[in-house]
Length: 214
Image (cartoon, rainbow, N blue to C red; front, side, top):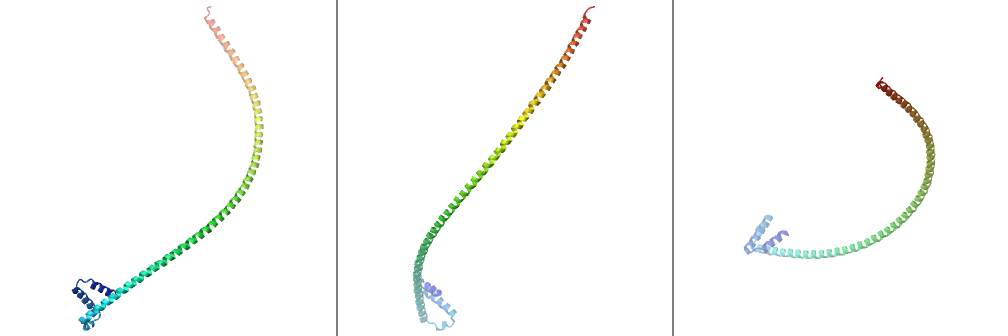
C-alpha cells in the first residue's frame, strides 16, 4: 500500500503528461522486474486501464485512510471522554478516601492526645509523690546534719575553751619566766654598770694622779 500511495502522490503532483507517463513507465518497469512475463501482455490500453485501476485503488486507499482517521478521532474522543470520566471518578473517590483518612486520623490524634494527657497526669502525680518523699527524706537528713553540726560546734567550742585555758596558763607561765629573765637581765646590767663606773672612776683617778703635780 505505501508504494501505491507514493505512486499516486507522484502522479497527482506531476506538472504535465510527459512527467506522468514517465512515472507510469517507471512503475511498469518495476512491475516487469518483479513479474518478468508481464511485458508480453502489456499494451497501451492495458497501461491506461492499469493507471485507472491504480488511481481507483489509490482513491479507495485514501478514503479508507480518511475513514480510519475519522474512526480514530472518534475513538480518541471517546477514550478521552472515558478517561475524563474515570479521572473524575478517581478524583471523587480519592477525595472521599482523603476525607475518611482525615477523619480517622483526627480521631486517632484525639485518642492519642487523651491517652498522653492521662499518662502526663499520672507521671505528674508520681513525680509529685516522689518529690514529696525526697523532700521529706531531705528534711530528715538536714535535721540529722544540723544535729551533727551542732554537736561538732559544741565540741569545737569546748576544745576552743580548753585551748584558751591552756594558752592562758602558758601565757602566765611565760610572763613569770619573762619577768624572771627581765629581773636577771636588770641585775646583770646593774652589775656591769657598777663595774663600768668603777673602772671609769679608777681611770679618772689614775689620770689625775699622773697629771697632778707632786
